[in-house]
Length: 121
Image (cartoon, rainbow, N blue to C red):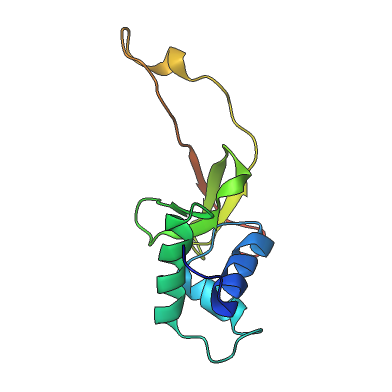
């Protein structure tokens, strides 16, 4: 088991406090407030460790680099701003989408991403 370093704790806290998936660059910028000497390589190394320990998950959306969010949020969807490319959580879920699958197919999971402009853009 890896030890919980100050850097790892700061990175996890930034992601948990953000309330939305963050890019590694956003994590770095927000964590710089607490740890001015933090570098991007340290962010990537700690994101990998946090994913391996099951505390953080990667959000993969088409056309952009992965974002990271705390794993404890449960099932939800995402909104991507087409202007600034930030990603936000969408807490609602339409529920069972099995009726949309072709006859005889079995839906095992689903992911929905909404696209548009955020309030800031």
